[in-house]
Amino acid sequence: MKKMIIKGGNRLAGEVTIGGAKNSTVALIPAAILADTPVQFDTVPDILDVHNLMIILESMNVKSSFTHGVLDVDPTQIIEAELPSKAIKSLRASYYFMGALLGRFHRATVTFPGGDNIGPRPIDQHLKAFMALGATVSEDNGTVHLDAPQGLHGARIFMDMVSVGATINAILAAVRAEGTTVIENAAREPEIIDLATFLNNMGAQIRGAGTDVIRITGVQTMQSMNTHTIIADRIETGTYLSLAAAMGDGVMINNVIPEHIEAYTSKMIDMGVDLQIGIDRIYVPTVHDLKPTIVKTMPYPGFATDLQQPLTPLMSRAAGESRVVDTIYPKRVKHIPELQKMGMDISAQDGSILVRQSQQLRGADVKAAEIRAGASLMIAGLMAEGTTIIHNADHILRGYDRIVWKLNRLNADVAIEDED
Ligand SMILES: CC(=O)N[C@H]1[C@@H](OP(=O)(O)OP(=O)(O)OC[C@H]2O[C@@H](n3ccc(=O)[nH]c3=O)[C@H](O)[C@@H]2O)O[C@H](CO)[C@@H](O)[C@@H]1O
Ligand SMILES: C=C(OP(=O)(O)O)C(=O)O
Figure: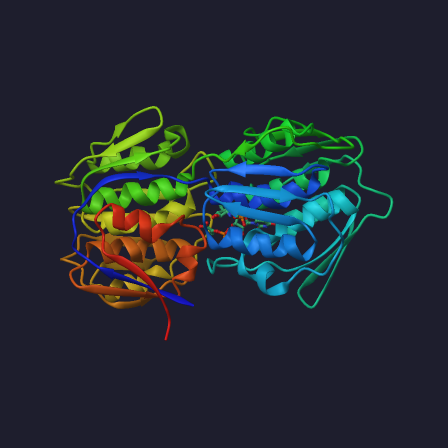
């Protein structure tokens, strides 16, 4: 495990460039095993999730190499093998190997995924989709076995709730199935469109990604003809927007898709941040006075659950009481006691998180329970007087591309060290 050490109080300025979206990347890499040719991705974020997915690929004899943001994956010599449970447990998205392996081999054995400690995360909708497509599902000791000896066939799948992961897994399983699959009440996240673009460019027939009805006509082969450039990470963007507004004296954020974070930028503008939004970049000027706000997380295009915690430190500067209601992960509150240690006036009450204007934050020894709790501690550490040590910083490294280098280029004083 690593710890992040932040000497707080530096004003931040300069430019930062956003990397490829974690939540696209972690679906695209498993999707690569559906191809009958090598594939290449660029603007791949340098995050732990990518390195762990490469370990999983290796176990199936799928060679991959990653340099300067370009990831090559060669699935042409893929074999069925036992997947390494440590790597599988290290990230949530390892469950995409269920859909991808089912699509490729008509069977899969995958340990239950790990991922962030943000409350219950059932996978019943994923399993329901696999069964609709003709697979049998059995579970023992935390391992899921999927089997479709007669192959997969198209089906109508109505999702009981809007789920990013279940929508992606259904696409991965259906893309080479026989016949047409219709996913209703599908998630509409931009990362789903990114995945469909990648697969369609290889010959898949997926229509409607980005709407709540996705139609997939199965194809027999998929062949990559070009490099797939991953869309910008909207959650990383929101994190830099928050820290730039909290501590910046002029920060330009490059490689942004502003349309993907409108729910977030509109809240910041309501709070009094004078964002200058361009076609693919956003400038955050020095912020003087902030108004409190109310945030309710919703599936896309609503306010992302992954961005409620990164906004919290900024809320603690607003004159009054802000409120967060996380309808997707109501138990996503592990940052609260840690932020309290830093002097923030924050509490959970009746299903809401309340953040009141706080005095100068102070550095403390804190623990990141999960990636976005870690992001909120990191921003609070940049704002605090003195030194903050964030333990379990691996959670932050799971999803933030070259974070130390990017922050220090903005004039922060941040380091990562091994725990003693
Ligand atoms: C790798 C990735 O892309 N992770 C994102 C993805 O996670 P993930 O795909 O796991 O999240 P889902 O969209 O599936 O979850 C949405 C809600 O549906 C529930 N649910 C989901 C599936 C299921 O079978 N049964 C069920 O009850 C979940 O508990 C949750 O309350 O979307 C979340 C919600 O935007 C984000 O926080 C995560 O960053
Ligand atoms: C919850 C998250 O990630 P994961 O689904 O990969 O655990 C996140 O990115 O905020």
